[in-house]
Image (cartoon, rainbow, N blue to C red):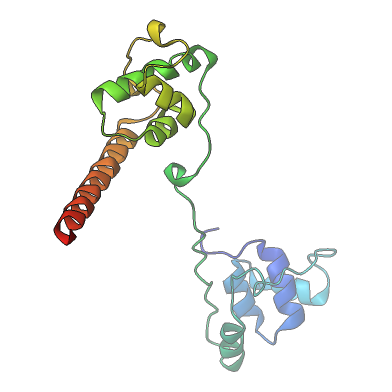
Length: 190
């Protein structure tokens, strides 16, 4: 059923009832047999099926129907149904962290602070899945359980991907360059 409209029989019912298109044009568009379209028009086929408007469904334009109505040999073309499929990485949904790994979040934050000190507390909090206050407390060594923390690589533990870490590090690098430029500009203007 590739390149067929959604709900072809219901679409055919609507086209038969609402357009002057030929049975052949409707059959070709809906990927049905011409005899089925004749049966729909005669009321023998598709009894009780409610017509499905392909214009509202964004599968066909009024202009396309009008052009094909003028030329019985012209085939209707299905409007490209490029439904935007969002990439899983772009979805802002929380990833489930098993209970056994949740206790490792502060350890992972400590690892990030030691290995990548240029990351902001908010970036660490977002990556690991803790609060910014917790990340700040770990950095300042005032976290309630700081003495029992042991730095653990969060990527190896599966808290987030290496790609996410690299993106965060690149963002931190851009921020540091920007801050350096702003500092230089302020010193020049003094």
